[in-house]
Length: 166
Image 1 (tube, rainbow, N blue to C red):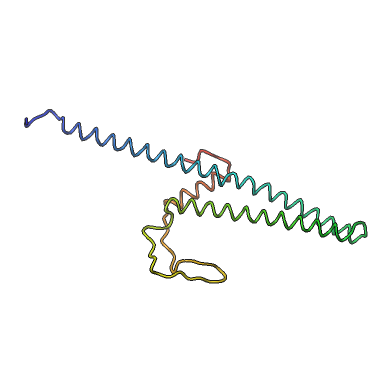
Image 2: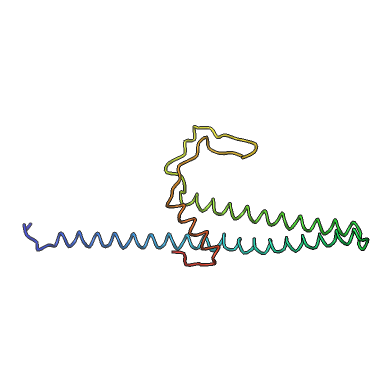
């Protein structure tokens, strides 16, 4: 084994570092692409649906108000008023379900990325259950600002209709 190999060992180290950096960049790009796909597939579509449901609920509210006015003036029956109000309540229920689904999707995305949890959850510690707020951990877990930043950028991108959020 020669003592002097004209920098071959240092060159091999430099090549290995460059390959490592290249693999890291490819990994990061694939994670960001997957994240963008999840955002576009679920939350964006649900936001569009939510907007349409909000418009529908407003229209049903206007119709129910008109039916009440017509009923008070004697132009329509109580059955028509009740039917309009039933339609309004149905549309409002669908709108609320859509809002819950958006929140659930964001929570699932945050959990999938490990948001807010720096380690394993202690399963020996009991959960607090409050009738008003539901189940939760005994103390709040620490927040992961990097994941929160990604979720915030995704939220802003969805609100702006921009798919290139990077």
